Amino acid sequence: MSKPIRILGIAGSLRRQSYNRAALRAATQLAPEGATLEIFELDGIPGFSEDDEQQPPEKVVELKRSIREADAVLFVTPEYNYSIPGVLKNAIDWASRPYGDSAWSGKPTAIMGASVGASGTARAQYHLRQVMVFLNMFPVNQPEVMISKAHERFDAEGNLTDEKTKEFIRQLLQGLVDWTRRIS
Image (tube, rainbow, N blue to C red; front, side, top):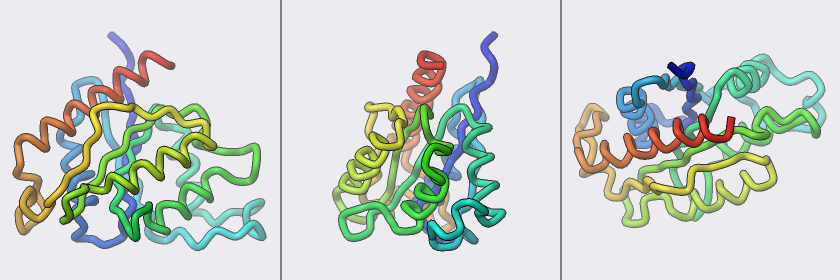
């Protein structure tokens, strides 16, 4: 039997009741057999400054350690102003520094996102893919999980209720596990 795949899940929203955090919580329950999904919370990471990159704050050290210990990464991102949120980009920048010490390099990755709009974070996901090129990350290309009209797919407690969306997330996670095993 293959060793279990450890996936690190990161939501690009700090809002406790965000649909993206809810989608990430749902993903922890939908991970395929032989995989675990652990969530890393981005709250508490200060704004990136090159002045501090040689001695990063403890929360950044913890982030980099978590990335390195994971076999793969799942990003769940909202879309702010047609792109990825600043809090997510900030965490990505911290974990890629100092130059030559990126925790992201070589990581298999998957992306999904939720929004109340019709595009379901498509633009943010494409921008995140552009960032991954420089970071030498290897994203799963399909399926693309863009959860549109999220307010119709989650209940008032933040539970994912839409079965079709659950199936897309299952497929994405299975694809990430398969991809991770293939390129590892």
